[in-house]
Amino acid sequence: MAKERVLITGGASGIGAATAERCFEDGFDPVVIDRVGTGIRADLTDPGETARALEEALKGGPITRLVNNVGVVCPAPLEEQTLAELELAWALNVRCSMLCMQALLPGMKQQEFGRIVNMSSRAALGKELRSAYAATKAGLLGLTRVWALELGKHGITVNAVGPGPISTELFNRANPPDSPRTKAIIDAVPVKRVGTPGDVANAVSFFLDDQSGFVTGQTLYVCGGMTVGVAGV
Image 1 (spheres, rainbow, N blue to C red):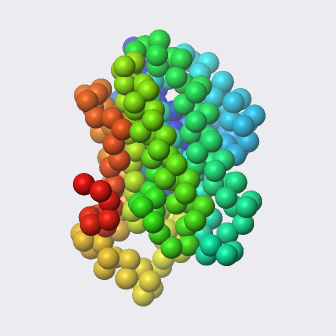
Image 2: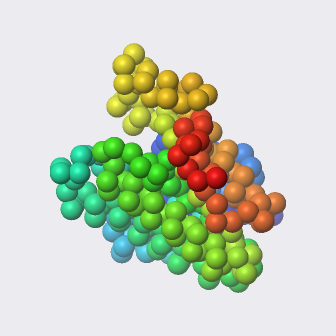
């Protein structure tokens, strides 16, 4: 019997790769779309390439699980944030998610089942130097709630994960272990460590599970407690 497939955007590295590995461990067949790696290659900032990649992914039939993981940060103070950076963040963090959702939705409705996880960020609650990133990640939270309301009657759940500081290659390059800045970040985390991609993948795994059908429209912050006192109850 063929394994159920999970589509993961940006699944070639970091949190996406950890999610793909966890999906495999959970018995799924991860289908990765990224501009690098061994999966389906595409520039997900380009709607045409995105459509082509989604068409290729769906050749094997409907895919009823989706992780909208691909994203870009573009850190800058407000006065230096460019429109090009804002448009890039919009293209990857929001538009790509909507295109993927629209492509997979007919199959989900046909199966009367779906699990969608949108990768937001703790920065959606506010973070310095993150105008483009925070705005688009907050946009994903809005989409999560709208889609949850629209699609629940079809057996489709839509949830979001909001990672805090996670030890990816990108994070570690920007925050060397012996840097005072890194120490300050760790000191601000109640559990006194940065997270791992596996911590985030664990949260995604919960939302993708068959048995999570009564949880929808929610955001789970995987942040070591940093959102306590910031996010609403």
